[in-house]
Length: 525
Image (cartoon, rainbow, N blue to C red; front, side):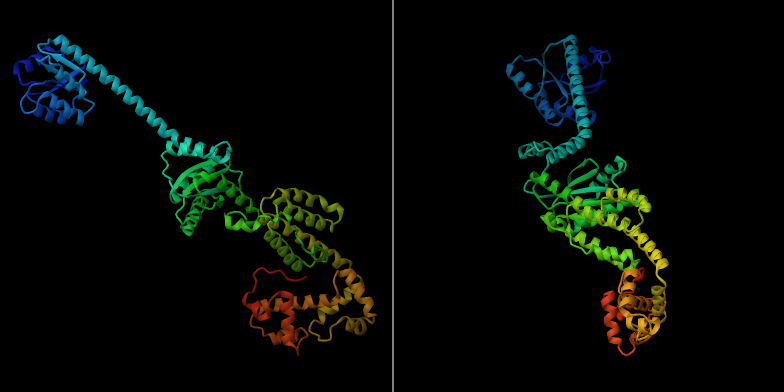
């Protein structure tokens, strides 16, 4: 029902209109009567009517003044103006204030009823229009975030979009980025084979936690956030790690994140390419890293570099079962390969080449399980994961080689090894001493035989066993003096020399070794 207020300073006219019109039949209800504009306006403020029927000539505030005030304050109200004057100036003034219905007195209930119907119909049309506009706006509000996401995705990945296109969308979405720089934050889930809802979860968490997010989207299995550059990089990086921690706590899935350098939004495609390049280097920097332009700066132009490493020595250590030495060499191998930052496929080719050389140390009948692991190794996408797979397999081969060699040593070499174990504390222990005094053999013959069967020189074997024994004693008794160690291992008169030998072999002196005692350090075999 439309609410109506009548205004006229003549009581008879006021009462006549009230009584003559069938308000309910016209879908209206009379909510107020007033004798002048001032009194009417108070009723209008209180009742909020839809239609006002008013005379023009009234004391205090006439109809035209009332129409002007209503137009300013309640523009939706429909005004029906009654007047005993046919002067066109009144009609013009009324129309300027939005009055569409102007009736000359005397007028009967039929004309007033027709004016009411027309005013009600106009109000209904206005209501429908307003409802339509409101629904359109509501729908637009729902889809606008998706439209923004799609526009950003197209702008980043479609080369046909240029600066003019971005300027158009900037105005369309009212993005206030004038003279402001941005950074792109690209999130990759680890592992990447996850539900797509997880990508949206990352996007939503990042929009909540990152400072000044401008736009966001998903590109394939990545979530991407554009943030306004604030100049406070440490704070931004901390917020990024907060996103990672929050997501990991909820979903038990890690994130690798790439952060671009700052730049103009018009340069977003180049910034996006930089973040994609950063993610490629997760192969070297491992999963769960935050990778920036600084991390890949030294990697550019490395394609022509070659990887140089003495793999023959490493293979010899595995072949002779010296796992401690081999493990250290493998760690150096992967560290040097990682520092070089080669093309990923090139880096994998070096690892595959070493892997194939290593499994050839085994009998061909045992190659099948290692070849199956090779397929798994090729599919791995970080150097850290490759090393984690490679190292246990190398240890297995080294231990098998050690056991095989231990069982196949000749009686002479086996006896020489037993003598070494028994005489580690003998300062005279040497190839000549064992050959001439204990085995009554030619030293040169014993040395060649020992090297052929064990894979290392006799003197190196003695040195390795002494250092291994020293490490065992240090682990059992951290308070053992260097002088005691030297004496027990045949260096009684030369503790300083023993310390130098220990450092050459392990990289630190016995004293320093005690301070940084490795928890899981391997032992030389």
